[in-house]
Length: 201
Image (cartoon, rainbow, N blue to C red; front, side, top):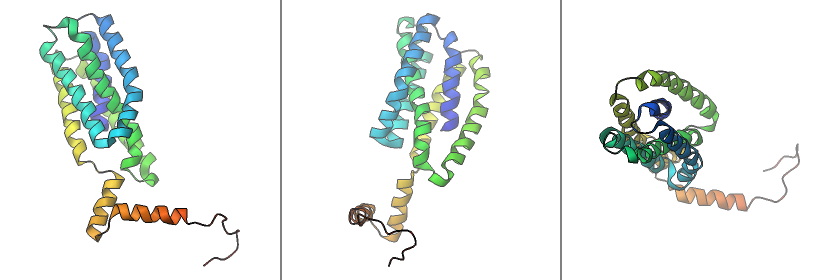
């Protein structure tokens, strides 16, 4: 996910100068959609969760890429809309990479996992500049393929909650009951905590 989103995010930013139509209008459309996608990406993730948010945004990005490939030459007037769709999807997905990491990896390893994923993704993104200079439509074919691949692969990513549910199923437990018990225990805690050095049962 990190590699697909980072590679596409940087590649389309460079490739926008080769997209048919007015380069200035296309660049403005790209920047506007990116700025809108940053806050909305986090909101979509909070409402829909990791799978639905990544799937919808990356699918939207792929749709924009395919529109640029197949309709770009014949519909230059609509090209800014295609750019908005493609850039919005990948920018939203790129945002979710950062806000979803703590839901996938344990807190103890969260920073290390984000650093490793970010390092590998940025390393692979080095080649995005070279791919962006390749003769069309290969860059957008790769862009759309990576977006679709990411939308499919995210279905196999399990969050910490999913892992806990699977563990409870194996043990025959119920996650909702355990969460309710935790809330009851938390609500029933004494208002004052024991002083340091005082033994408690």
